[in-house]
Length: 384
Image (cartoon, rainbow, N blue to C red; front, top):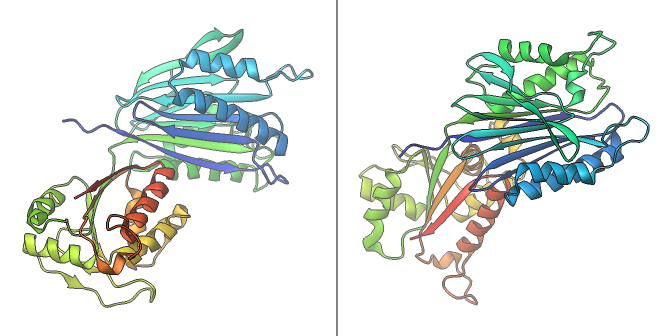
């Protein structure tokens, strides 16, 4: 079976100098049928622009998530948004990128800069044609994307960077395209690409942005998978079957729980080597089993990992090597997380006032799932 490719999304933004709120807004949704990104640039800056852009993205994302045809989505938004009487332009521009599981991408642009397509080291405009929807001129295009293709969308603030200063006419579309082709490689992830373009934008503004600036990068790549095995199966006779299945899983492997680690060791014949170096006194030490990416303690480490996921950006530069930080990194890097959760009851994790199936581990895994799904991860929990 062919592995579906995964659209990785990254957003980087600057507020206009002197403003606390960004007048650009980005909303992304993932469903079984599509991944959708909506970018909106509210007229002006500050609170008013932020409200207008938020209204636009919320309406569009909600409609697209319900599989409303894009033509109807555009019609609804253009009919909802007022037009500035003085400037005769919409109060908010928008751009929609929708990618289906087969990597067919649809792009709709309404008064927004054209979308960049980075493919094989070359940058070209995403192919669109002009059409009219609800009396409004929009551009729409479709293209089947390949692995390592990158779509980049920017707001006007990026296009106009440096205008009247370092660059008399601004950075403009060709300038950004040249920068993407020269300094963004297929090995770069979406976050690195978005951050690089925004860094250049800020440089052209001399660190004093004259407009809200947004860069969105969507990279098509193979999905990253993680299988987490925590807790022994309820039936000891299932140990070997569950462990063999765990070891055959695609992607990275993690074990959470001392008893679980011992089961994996017994079935696989690979010893558990405990690391007694306490990186964090509050986190139990981790261990190692050949072929397993991480072996940690159970409930305490899982709970701490959930807390570390509150700010995933800090995990990239984190140098701490405790089990909770390493587990949080693995979870944050994965696109799909499969959790094999044993249902054997550990008396240490059981509240005597609760039924046997309602224990601390159940609550921790429920919290973990909520946190991961809020980060856009696909999570499957299977109780064994």
